[in-house]
Each structure stands twice: as C-alpha cells, then as structure tokens.
Length: 209
Image 1 (tube, rainbow, N blue to C red):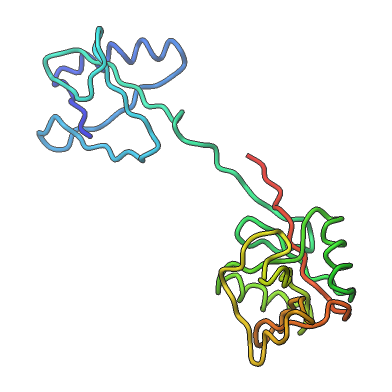
Image 2 (tube, rainbow, N blue to C red):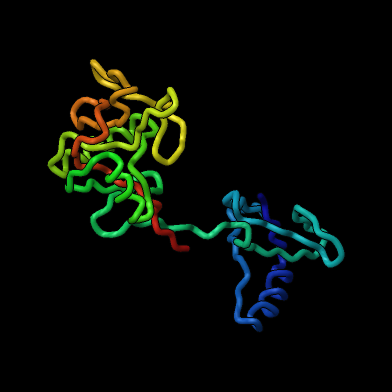
C-alpha cells in the first residue's frame, strides 16, 4: 500500500492540528529520496481505510484531500492457555500422570472428578509427548483412554480412534482384554480392565484473554 505525501505538507499539518486536539497522532511516513510515495507493510488483520470528504476510497490521490486511519479492530484478542501446577500442556489440553494405581474404570472415574478423562492420542507428536511425560514420572505402564466396545476401539472421550501405535503382539483378544495401556518405551497394549496401573488424565486448559 502506498501513501501520497504532498510536497507542501499542508494536508499533514492541517490534520496534525486536528488530531493533536484529541491527544492523538497522525501516522508519519518519511519520503525516501525524491519519491512522494512510501510503501507501508500492513499485517493482514489490520484494516487500512482511506476516505475523501464524501466517499470511501482505497488509494491516495495527490489531487484530493484525504484522511486515513488505522484500526486494529479486526484483530482478535490473543488467548493464553495455561495448566495448573503439576500438569503439562499439549495442544490446548493439560496432561498429568497419576502415580496411584487403579483399575481402568476407577482411573477413568478419577479423571472425571478433576474435569477430564483418560488421555487419548491424536498423532505421533502427541504419542511422543505422552512417552516423555510417562517416563518423566518414573512410569512404564499407564492406562490410556482406549476401550474396545461394541466391536471397535474408541476413546474414553467418545472420539474415534484414527491413529494407532500398537506394539507386537497387541492388540490381543480385545473382547476379553478391552482396556488400553501405554508402554512408554514401545507403544500401546491391551489387557484386562481389572488390573491396577498408574494412568494419564487429560483436562481442558484454562484460558484467559
């Protein structure tokens, strides 16, 4: 976008007096060499409006008086996401390894009491994050939120299972071993839901603007 700068400076001086009365300031662009145009690089979320006394236009013209204003009204506020102490952030959710072994269903109920559910896994990056989190907590085997139900695997949050990372010989006889666990050095396995394991809870992040 280019801004014309009249040689006599009359427009800038005239408008500067007006805006200073409101404790504001005009956008100032210095002339490079003999050129009367300067390029202004604007972010896509910034609206640059140029208007004459009667109609809105979108370019400067040396033959007309114009007024210009820059507004950031189109920019959405930047949201900040954070987790409680002891929880780790990943992709706008918070995760924590609970080092108190429980059965699968008791672990899921515990996660619900803190506002979440047993962790699901969306992709390789997420999987690697959970591996590091589990190893950092000194654990190898932890419950994940995978459950074999009505002939298919699904997550405890009811989302479909599109990504998988089973390690040999799993999954093994899921009808009798319908609950998923994570081996933090290999991948996923499945076993009887009544076994006791540590587990990973996942909750929504806190957000503020």
